[in-house]
View (cartoon, rainbow, N blue to C red):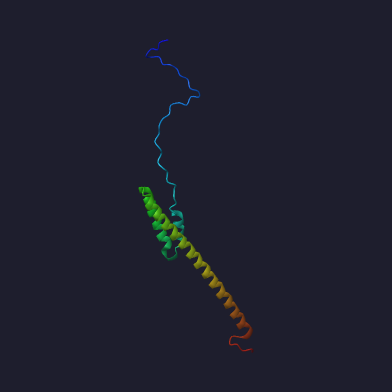
Length: 128
């Protein structure tokens, strides 16, 4: 049997795997990182101890700007600084509130004790 130009010999391979295309390797995808923007806004409005919340917000905005431009390394650096400032603002504000409440309640209990003592013994310490 002679083959013509428009006829091809059928060689069957089972199972059919189709045409294989060579695709270039995809670029490695950078894992998304956090810029801590929402936390910075919360610290700016609620826990702005010594303006640390404002500074954290500024670094978060810088991190977002760097991410948009495509500078991943710079964005991660600014995000790390914003995270550190947010941690410092949160911890210092919570400590300040706890210490202030502790001192307030301690002084109130001490004042109540002094007032009770004055009612029992009079204002000048005399027993009459």
